[in-house]
Amino acid sequence: MVRESNASGKKPKKDGKKNARTRFFVTLVTWLLLNLIWLQASQAIAVNEVNKHDHEINGNYALNVPNMMKMNKEIPVDLSCDFKPKNSTAPVVLVRIQHKSPSGDISTLWEGNSTDECPDISMSLIAGEHVFYTTVVLEAGADPYPSRNLSAEMNLGMHLWQPFRVEGFVVANALGLFLGIADRAIRGIIRRRQEALIRNMPLHKRRQRDEWEQISHSMSGGAAVEVEDLVGFQPEETDDSMEIQRRRMRDKFAAQSTEFDGDTDAFVDDDVIDQDDELGPGSTEGLTGEVEEDRNIRTVGDLWRKLSGSEKNKKKKR
Image (tube, rainbow, N blue to C red; front, top):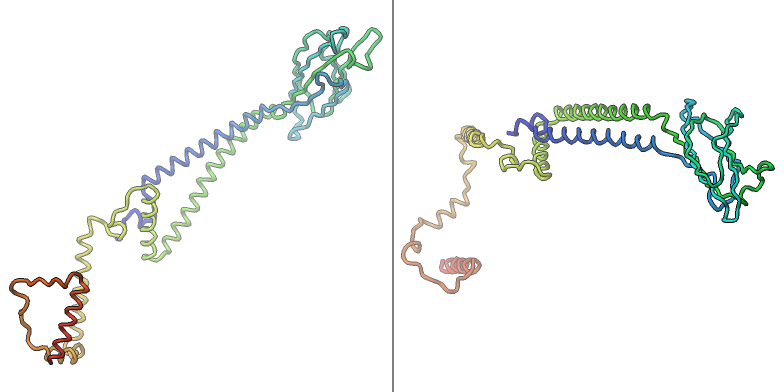
């Protein structure tokens, strides 16, 4: 008989608990990874290089701010700058940074000498085209060639996903919850289908399947499979099962003997009876007394050849 835990189509409790812990751990790791991925993505910065030292100054830079998710949210933008005289002989000049919004409004972000420290500036910009002007101001007005007296470096960094930080965490947690529920639902569907297949499976195939699962479980590191498990018998019921089998065999032979009573001639072989009559009565001659050693007999083959030779000599004498 097959073990009850396997006959019902269920896995051992230890395996169930182990699989449950594994699924919980995988779900927890997935949830943490989703939150970490969004945390890094929300802090990502898209850097736009406006000017670089020892290069020509771009005094008119256009920045296109995208409309993320079509939600018309303002995008945080960081402006970092650094100015210095072109060389040791270049004069100190006045530098002005201005910003023009998509609506056409112009505002001054910073103004100072080329030797002054330019501070970092943070702002929130709406979607559209924004223009940043870098101007060198002389007594006669704006210098048309600012690169001859000034070396500049300026970068604009856009935090594209920062306005959606809260919404992103909500989506990440909802996605993690959905994956956990979906995994549980899919496993339930698969389990019900397997149970339906097992119920419709013939008994001998079900037992073969259960025995194979026990062997596979043992080979994969599970509990060791006993010999009684491989043959499909419980250890405590082995004696009773063998006794039942012996009883059935005795009943079967008894039924056959009862069926063939009075027709024993069908089992008599005349040729065998004739051969037994020719042999005559048996005796124990040669089987008693001291054993005589024969050095010619060393292997079973030697003994077989000697016996065969003895039979041939007896036939010749006859």
